[in-house]
Length: 429
Image 1 (cartoon, helix red, strand yellow):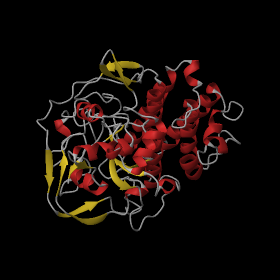
Image 2 (tube, one colour):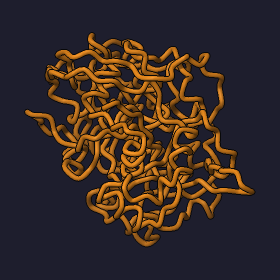
Image 3 (cartoon, helix red, strand yellow):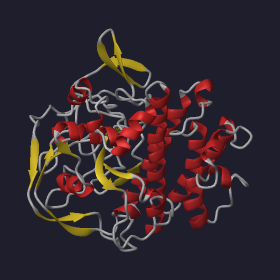
Image 4 (cartoon, helix red, strand yellow):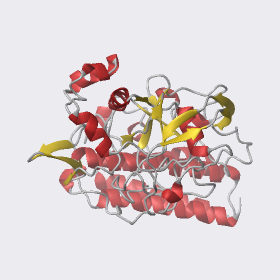
């Protein structure tokens, strides 16, 4: 690997570290001690777990570093400690001790990766993996803030995106043979074309022609469904959807509230008027499915979604081969789900679809399953525990890090969940 790649990796570690600290430093003592909630983790446990991942998968195997916090592997390993136990003060160390551990691991990682003039492929690959893992936990810290009504992250911005596109309507995707996923990388090339095991091995797939919305479903579009009795008409909901609706007693999307006759939405700790141009967020799969039935539409399969994003030349990103910038996508809370669904014309796919990266994780109709020939990667639980009972979502959200999503990226989300930044677009029958 070149010196430039080494510098990029070190900069990515530093940027990710600074964001994690920004998500911790402005929390009060009361906010650090969050109540138990099924969909989140305590912020301090997230910090220790992220450090453990660097230590366990990079520092120990590559540099033979002794355990930095002896005896605490079962506490920081998410597959050893039960979820509820992460709230236990007698089990999980306090903020000061955890931050000392985290900062020592980060510094040790930077020091080791800086020792040589260039990184080996293994160093580069494991470094990218550990960064990507931490970025996933940055996103979970952000949805923790939304879930609990905390203030928006300090790095959240409201930049002016590229001019809105004249995008209403569908993009027509012609029938053809398209590339799905990524090839299994050669050992000496995997650090150059980083991917997770669930994106591999790539394959070609014959698809019939289909039409897909150029934009995400907006708040205004979903409001029509709500006000047409969408949550009180069982016929729009599947068996699973009706069970979910009754179980949670939901009469409108989470975070929606009608005040003085007008709908509002809670964004972090702010109650704001419903903006009909903004994308729908925090929807369960069942709600997206019910809307589609009401609208006479359907959800795309994950393969249709990927083809609409990649185009016939199988692009890495909808706009090409370069990583996202502020003109391409709403990521890292730049902005946090408030840009119009017709914005970011600079990030359009070859077929004219907008915001396929960023803004909202997009529900698909596909179960989250391995591709034929799947081989588990270094982290055995990155994908395997979710296969079968989760749905595949695509694209990343407004809370996802800039360097994490790509067209082939697959995220597993349980269909009941509404805490994550999930939305959808629709297809014609």
